[in-house]
Image (cartoon, rainbow, N blue to C red; front, side, top):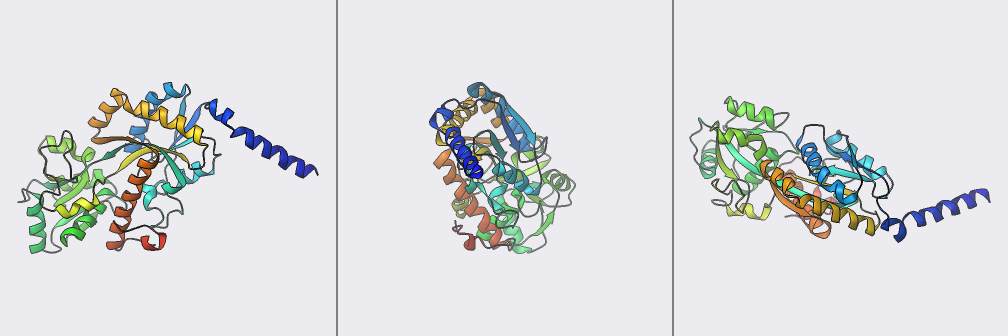
Amino acid sequence: MRRLSFILIVSVLGICLFSPAYAADYPQKDLQGVIMWGAGGATDNVTRAITPHVEPFLEKQIVLINKPGGTGSISTQYVHSRPSDGYTLLFGAENPQVHRILKLSEMDYKDFYPVNIFGRGVGVVVANTDMPWNSFKDLIEDAKKRPGIIKMGSTGPGGLPYTVGAMTKSVTEFEVTSVPFKGEGPGVTALLGGHVDFMPAGITAVREHIRAGRVKVLAVVSDTPIPGLEDIPLITQDYPEFKKYLPWGPFYGVWCKRDVPQAVKEKLVEAFQKGASEPQFQAFLKDFGTVSMNISGDEADKFLTKWQSVTCWMYEYAGATKVSPASLGIPKP
């Protein structure tokens, strides 16, 4: 009887906790923000830039902690283990969308609600200045003439260079030798030194090198002009087949558990949409080489589904998956 009474009390408390009245008073305390990657990285920078603009609308602080590891799986597992009350938020990037095909986790963003996707990064294809190519088409034609000879800088499965390389192979059937590095930074350094011939990279990693003329930029991985990069040819200019994969790139956002009460989700969405609209944050995104999105809910879920479809099938075509996306119900792009 005592056990039954305890269960009834806990059930009643749970009903009260998630009642409309509780949600109306949310938040009653500070929130915890769990950052998927370590201090100083892109996700960390975006998170710390947006948070001060959101806190005034919540009238509470968001206490941030970095919880890297497992390509983002440690932080997703942690947030998912917390109560569904909206007080623990996941600040992350795109990585969970490939966790299942790489057997890193059984979770991806299907288990979380997208409070806001702030923006997406943009990839560019850059080459060593000694290379003879003046366009992306020049590179492709040369690779077809010399299969396996040209060296491409990469970061291994999961990174932007790898995925753009897989896209390119599926569209053009070119064959190059991929040289993996531990990050875009070391890869770009190798490119500057002539150890690799070209590299797809995030604009944030190569923007200053482009401005200084230290690398030759061949294309932007987009089918629409990007503010500030209008003078760089679109990758679809000579290869319109890329369009079915675009827009694509790294992205940054904030999530809560999928089963958080609707009224709480709405408060979070409103606060983050207002914060992300602040001119100072928008200026940060532009300077950071990120295209502003500021989307949530169904619109964000649609974006996430397409991104996952494109990326997971690119990995499948490249032979990099441990589990077929077809077996997970992930549709082909």
